[in-house]
Image (cartoon, rainbow, N blue to C red; front, side, top):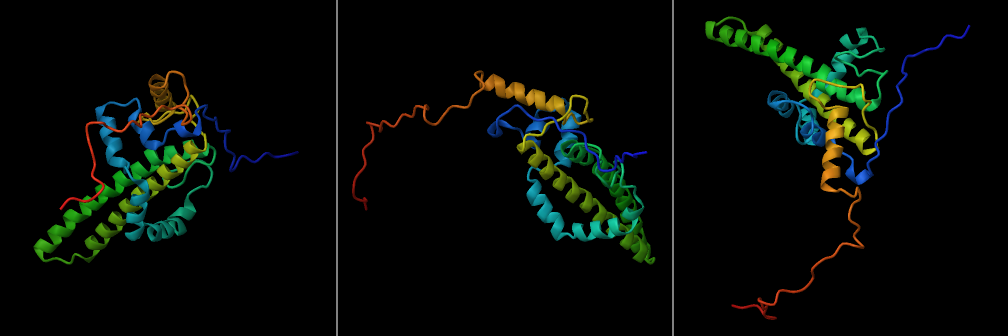
Length: 227
């Protein structure tokens, strides 16, 4: 009897009908997401406008080292099949897996470690003020701050991956949704905006574009500099 293994299986990725020059990136989808003012504010806080720069910043803060330590210890206990707060879901398309991790797993982890870091920071301040030993609270605060940095590093990397997939022509399935609206609804809204700004559905060709190259007649120029 043949046993079918589904580990590592990914659902086929639907493709975009848009030409390469009109395909959206993550920021385009964020701007066209079906989300209210609160969710848009959350998205603005969560996602850097420059993910490449964010990656560099958190690399300098040691995020890759923190990631290697976590995945080499606790990460070994996490099942590789299915999604988690520390792994992308291998059963999803690359685009949906990256988006799901960016808006879900990394956000939950950051909120958790931010809360714990704040709690330990309060203990640290009290220990210093009372003259108590603050070594443990200082280490705990530093560790959780590093884990917050790691989540922002991971999220920026996922946004870069999403942009690569979108640029390659991938898009979301109709049944994929998330709470920030960065899904097929955002794609549809973006495409509607593109269509309304360009009704014929075609980009103007450089060969047919008309440029006004007539020099202004009301202004004269001297051939020599004036002193």
